Image (cartoon, rainbow, N blue to C red):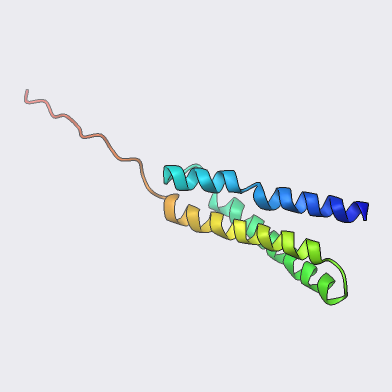
Length: 101
């Protein structure tokens, strides 16, 4: 029971830990400083753990793990979409003043 509670708490923290970054991207409309490869690797790792979690549920345990891992997978997917949407936008350039000399 104790270890189930630790897993649930850790899973919730991992799942919701990405929310501040998601909010920041949505607020600033910029993800230029984030590395897409990092989030793709995280997504792949979480997806592999999702397969494991599904296997646990099929064999009668791991329901909390499946729920928290699914939330992490969704958050990682959102991050990837936001990086693709806002990551490559360049900062607006200030107009260049031309001298008439």
